[in-house]
Length: 297
Figure 1 (spheres, rainbow, N blue to C red):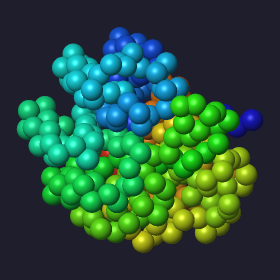
Figure 2: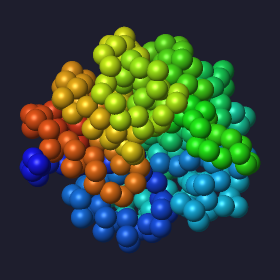
Figure 3: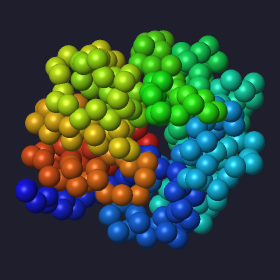
Figure 4: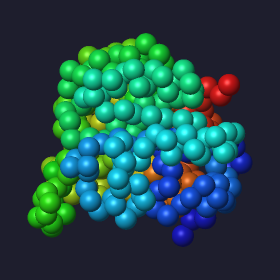
């Protein structure tokens, strides 16, 4: 088995959350130090209670908050206690009449730099969402979105499944309508389109070889304002299911790939460092592209 090489360079985790999966601030910082992560984009998740899978209740202690399940206030708490380690993200639900006003206030008062994570049961090209994306484009905030199809997880209550975003077609329409806005795609419903097969809405973590001609590849070539967040099992699986293809993919789109975790393991670094990528490509993925989108002060 090939050993991976540890590359010493700045590392920015573009996708994580406060109080997530049992990690308070002290555990969080220790985990970042363990894996050499210099900074993290700390993202909220605002959604109505009836729109997110109750399975998430075991991952975050905030269950009675109007802005849950991951309210911006918790992101702010981490930032205030460890200001050099975190960059703030906030994604108020764009369907709320005061959403843009709330985001603008958070930008002015707390230096919010990312609109994310947007993860709700709303078509991504909803008119209120388009208005929000255009505001973000005007203010240089990248928009990080989560896409899930109606995957069958074998449950019936309270919903048989939890879709988010409305699929890749709705996402593409949003990207096309907002060419001045930078979008960052994430999650099973996004990464499943790396392959041109019929599994994109059936198996969120399909292990088969990548079939050339995937919708994601087509969109990346067509829309220069589209970026990729490799976080979570979905991003890592999309790459590790076909390492040879992953090298080609990461090389071609090296200027638009962002390293992230959405958890506290090290599977993404282990994979990236185990394949034959030039140091220059790794540097872009680990931090260069994040710094391009959100420069440090």
